[in-house]
Image 1 (cartoon, rainbow over the protein chains, first blue to last red):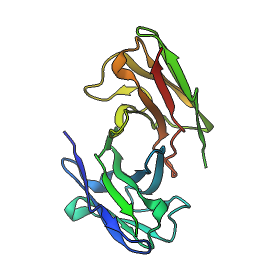
Image 2: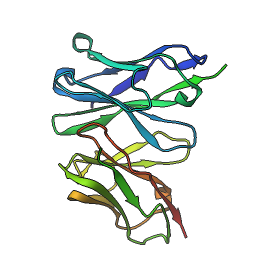
Image 3: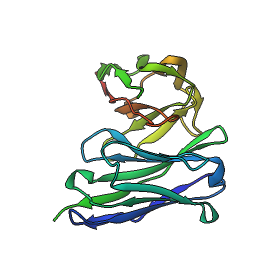
Image 4: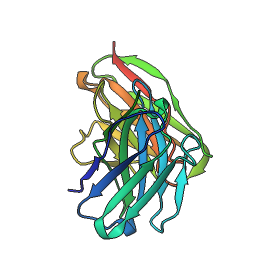
Length: 115
Length: 107
């Protein structure tokens, strides 16, 4: 069974940076579109960013210019580089994968932005 | 961008009732539509993808249907453990937009 495992969350001060990772087993990243989604405390789900199977990248307006999505196909790993973090970026971040007719979700990693 | 509108925003039904939640897109798109269940304090659980494909391990009382702009999640016989918030999401063509959620409670 496919598993997506996020890591890299933690506590960071406003203005700081953090890099999230999402590793996958049993499928090849190059054939999948991947995405990051977040959920702030007590709020709904918010799409953050996506990378297509061909490598095109897309961002929500709320993170454009601050976050960068990337992938390392050789390592089957997805990344989210988060710079200039704000208090309102505090959330659980999930990675998701679409491909081969399937859709997969991870278990999330918590990012807390606070002084 | 395509907007996803869920209705109702909340509902209260009796155990055994048939429950229907609707997700309407502002423009038509392919069937890359998923439904999630989220219980308080828990990770969202994928119930259905590709509009109607039941995720492995999800009870058969859950079903999805629809295409184009109108999609539906149906719980054929509501159970106490189904109390949760349900979200739809389109997962093709950025942004992968979510609906605002539907809170389901037991009457």
